[in-house]
Amino acid sequence: MRLAKRISQAALRVRAAAVSEDLIIRLRWFLLLTGILGIYIGFQVGDDWYVKEFATYDWARGMGY
Image 1: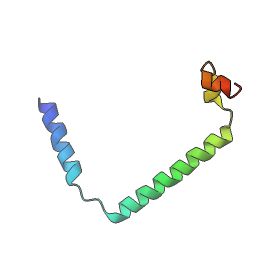
Image 2: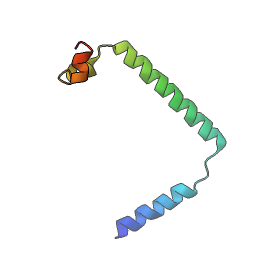
Image 3: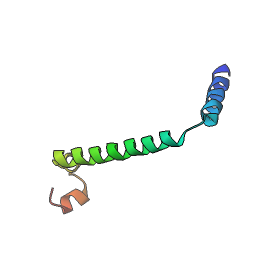
């Protein structure tokens, strides 16, 4: 029971923490750049490994894999 109480107190502290507007802006930029980088890396790999791995499904057969 003590662990649950400590977790709930920590959650209350996190909820009550002041988040500056600057932090939100930086976090949004970070997430945007991370997403763009992930898409770029995904297109660079471009091997369709996910389709080849699961090519037993009908939708993959319909696409020619």
